[in-house]
Length: 259
Image (cartoon, rainbow, N blue to C red; front, side, top):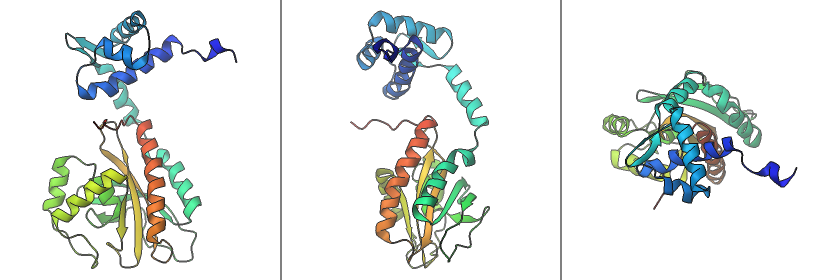
């Protein structure tokens, strides 16, 4: 392949600029100079391509600069209407089933509970009694904590105000401890249920986020305490967090810059 073949096309450049608008607009309107500096493209090229994007409704412009246009929201809505989270999450579930041999769950939030919507059984002789449709509480399951850490404040407030039953002696039962757990989960990207829901079960989970950074679903790796040591849970959690983050990015999620 020649060097010319590696050069970005006009379409490549337009998509790069659109992605930059999405990222930079988290701090306000995006100016031409911001796009020139961030992309490295010549100013006339940026002007021309932004005019094209604007003509198609992909960006809008006012005196302060650019932001994403309504056409992007329309396309995103169509994509989400046809999205099957089970299909999208299945490769990750299969990957960690093969890697760990443990039980893999996929769950969504439903009110103040998590609901399993898919499962891959463990290869170990001792299997978990859970199944599709099983429900668990937010405060004492890895899936519940992993997803609720990224939920909006209204949902978090409802969870914090609700009763927190002590399922085991290890369960979190007060709002301050749960709030602190969410902060740690957001930093590390995964949650651990260390015998908090069932006495002999240890789980690790990570959330799959949408373009707004809200939880669409969560994936967990579960086993008995003899099958899943705390060291393995932490190692698996780091890998699972990276896999779920990659899928979240495919769905439009962009982590907010830290300054």
